Amino acid sequence: MSARRLSTIRQINEIRRVCRNQSHLIIDGWNVVMKTPGGHTDFSIGEFVLFFEVDAWLPARGRYGELFKEVGNPALLNGENGFRVAAKSVTSTFKPYEVIRSQGHVFKLAARKFPVVHATFLREARGIGEMTENNIEILAEVLRKMDFSFVLGVKKWENEYESEMANIKIPSFVIKSDMDRVQNCVNLFKKPKYKAFIFQESVKMDGSSMTMYFVDHSSKCWDRLLPVPSQYASRSVPSDNARFGVCSKNFDLLDNGENQNKLFWDAAMKSGIFPILRNVDLPLAVQGELVGWNINGNPHGYPRDVVEFFMYSIIDLEEGVRLDPRKVEQFAGKLGLLHVPVLGYVKIPEIATSHQDILDRAERRQGEGLVFKNCDDGRWFKVHSASYLVAR
Image (cartoon, rainbow, N blue to C red):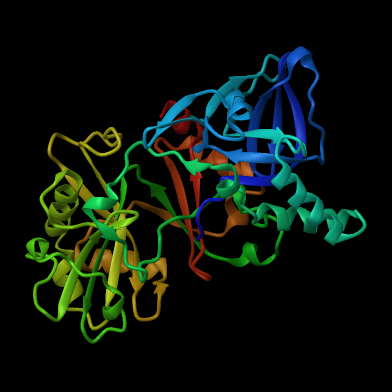
């Protein structure tokens, strides 16, 4: 698992015509449709470009604001004007008239436009040496791991924002639920080891990430907890020697009765997970998705005032590792807890031979997409339904 790299240098693998004024670029596992005025694309196969992933937010102010205008789709982020890279559907005017789900935007790697990015590219290219086929592949692997978001002022666009003033930071011992998109798992169909791994395939639910933890004073995690103001400690601090926590994606939420905090805390109490965690010998955290009538536009169609928590992971806080997803599913079933729907356990070659095959698999299911958890090495990746992203 890793934080998303929204601004990277990528190599164009293939170019197809969509219509007279648009081209379809295939970049690793990503599909990107770009305007080509007059029908002549400025891009070429094998070219390295600056690539922005879907949901990247590019600032309107500053050094790159004028360049970023071509992204379109104006969007506010924390009161600041910018442009959101959004998913979009484009239908080809050439046979077989396919619908392309574009999920990114690219710029030429020009020194005068993006000097820092361009200089980094030149430095890495010189370090590789002669541009043989193998060295170019090594260069591409090195570059795609670099994120230029900070240099360019790029951030992840979000619908809603949590107040840092109202909460404390999520404990450092909680493993973030971030995961790569399948398009960024470039070795999935290259390295032989992935052919043998078993993956849990589950439904990606559209809600809000939520974590519940229990730690007592005997745990080595105890000293890593930030203090809770006494007026908010009634449910989170059951005794001087123990602590319950309810976290959103980024914050340890105070039990202060305010809006989102109340929603999460009430759901935690309703789930019945805290008594279970307290009676387990190990300090654990349970992660999952909170879904319901007033979360993310209620895509799952819940009645008013109904929310539910679906677990998908358990963290052993002492060891700092996630439990095998098979054990997590068994844990939930044994204790009558809700778990995200599991579709099965598969090996990737049994269901797909390319990134596009997996994307198509998610597209055939109604909903946001799929999640694949590796039962052998603990890595996860997600597969969004492109049409779902466009509709969102």
